[in-house]
Length: 65
Image 1 (spheres, one colour):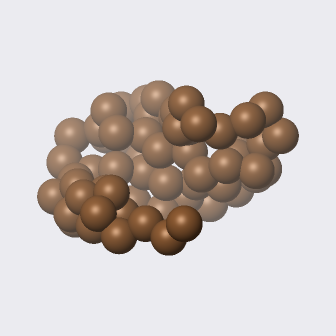
Image 2 (tube, rainbow, N blue to C red; image 1 turned 180 degrees about the horizontal axis):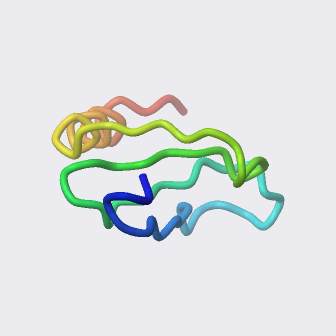
């Protein structure tokens, strides 16, 4: 992802400080990066921004309690 710019990784404000989180970089043009906060030097997944937005909307409306 570096050829597209430098990702700015962030995690949910609901996450604690344990480091067991999913981090997202949504500052890249047209794509969203996703990685495991336990392995920041490891691989990341890249999704088209529109696909990621669809996933987030689905997750907002289909939560388990």
